[in-house]
Image (cartoon, rainbow, N blue to C red; front, side, top):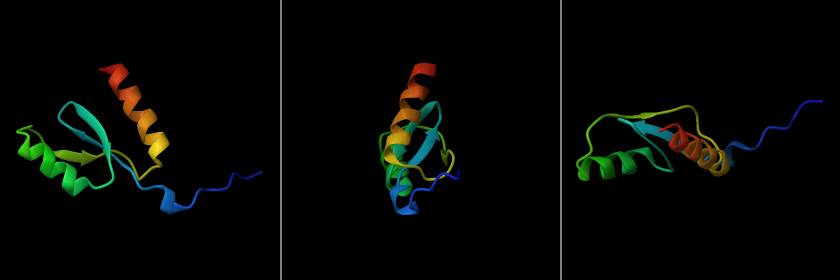
Length: 67
């Protein structure tokens, strides 16, 4: 039995990495500007595809445990 895919509209959260910091956001451009204004160094890069907020939060917690 095939599992139904969730509608892409629910996949509204990006996972990203900048330097050694991992995070999640709905708007990569805005978040990159916030990091730049805060004086953080490094280039922001998207990690994976857009995901649901719940899975993004789980990923973020997992990254914190690794650090």
